[in-house]
Image (cartoon, rainbow, N blue to C red; front, side):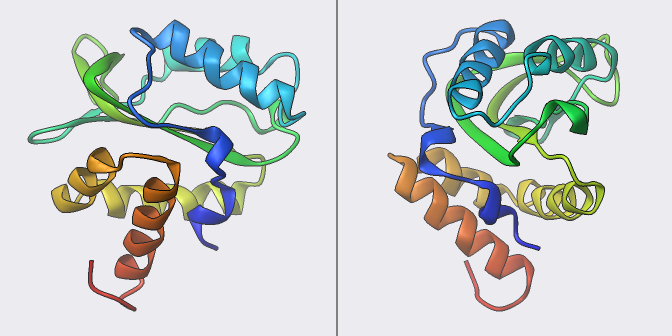
Length: 162
């Protein structure tokens, strides 16, 4: 299982124009809906789940968020990848009273438990290395994001140095 199998160029936003979480969720949901990847409840459930179980992670120099929702809201699996230089506010996973400005956001549209676990493990491995985050944030287009994530996955598997 490789997280890159769920990432397509049309679900990547380099330097997203979104200023807040609501706009980001709406943008991702509209694109996913136009491709018949989600049910009509995806946006509502994504927003509700993030309010109850925040997904922001504050790392040493960067913020990351991993929002997701119930598997029944996803008809075709995907991972949306968004970067933001200014950061988009997310409540922190560890302490919902704190916020983080997420520079890197992965919206997980997964509907199989084993996929979700494998992807989360790979994403956690990727974001725990600041060089991986720097490389993703330096990407100038969708192809560079995909290439960087492919290299990160190979690195995590021990097959290649990043």
